[in-house]
Length: 284
Image (cartoon, rainbow, N blue to C red; front, top):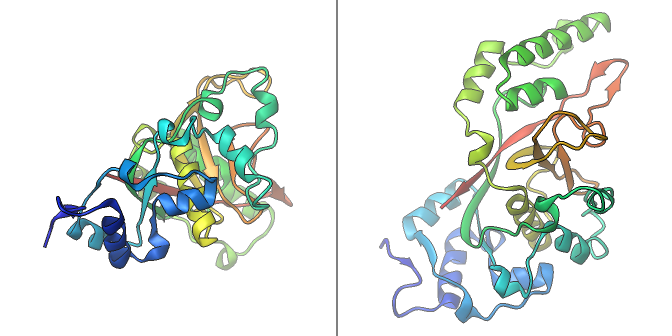
């Protein structure tokens, strides 16, 4: 059977129940979990059909994907912006740290991604997956990798080797890192930032999943998004900068690349501390 959910004689409630039987309760987040997370009650008759077939949901279950419903602004009473989510959750859940400087920055800079943009409405399937070969790259190497900056990537890889040599770290103790050509081909096979979900979509998905399951989909990892912010002279002079999201144990973080105020990688004895960008994919 390969019908779409719900069938013509079905209901939103029965469709969600059937999707839950296929994917498991921890991987289906509909109106009930939306109310639990954000105190937004949705009548089921306002929730649209789930636009995935039985086979598509079975395939999603095999790949540990999660089915999420993102509401419309009208269903929320007002737009569910990142700023509003921050206000709704930061007192209730201590691990939703966000960037405490963002409200202060919005007094002087127009950051629509934080104050105005709302999640893309409808049902969607999401998956968080680490990008092969990137776990042990330095911050600069990760930035060059994501930006498809081949010269910058080659330079960053050389700097990593020099730092390990200067610290006299034996080769057997150094992490295994793919070579330049292999990393270039991996990046070439991945979506461009513009093809990824927006920052508000990623944050909504993460928070909804975390409040329902206590699981951080981006634990110790960083996700690129399609969102960019304009140049802010007192922070950076790099023109439009992509916004990235991470969700370590201490709380969800919003930062932009090469920022001197957010996300700068620290070092121990001049040895780069690696991070791990991920591929954050969205299916329709």
